[in-house]
Image (cartoon, rainbow, N blue to C red; front, side):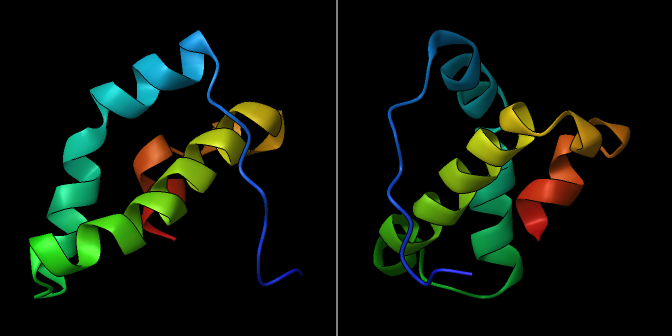
Length: 71
């Protein structure tokens, strides 16, 4: 597994899903007692990676998106 992965821009469907589930990101940050202003830009990349992964791998659709996003 590569440490750094290049994210490609979200397509329209991915973007709508990322916007719809955005509260998962802020809830994750708060649940782990992280400062939102300090860690949002760090955590958002993992969140966007989860969005891309969810749409590119149909085998993950047996799980709720929230499960994948929190991993």
